[in-house]
Length: 120
Image (cartoon, rainbow, N blue to C red; front, side, top):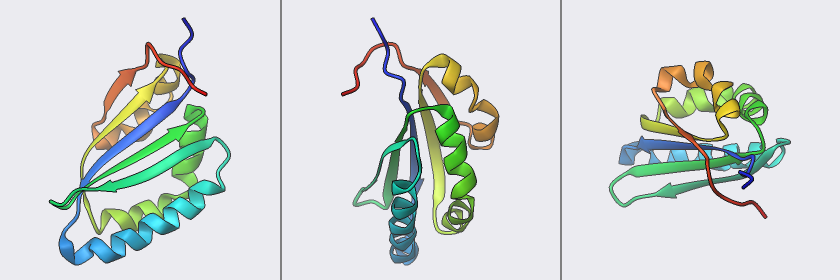
């Protein structure tokens, strides 16, 4: 069975109410930037009533993730001043995840190897 060649990055954050508007502005800027990135398949932010935020991003390869991190580093830095990152997960084929271990090591992410799935 073939496994979809998608790399998914999931970020978990909490945001104080005092930073909610500024963070949403950053989200809008990041979405616009991501629309222009080759290999960036999908991106979404979901907000919980308790100030929690989940970011989900799908890429066609680890190389696209690396390119994204380089292009958006300035926005990511300003975002870190607004939120607390509480966790991160990377999902994808083992060979692609291996390329990302060093890049994400400071976030102490969970790595999950995709074994089953499909892509339309």
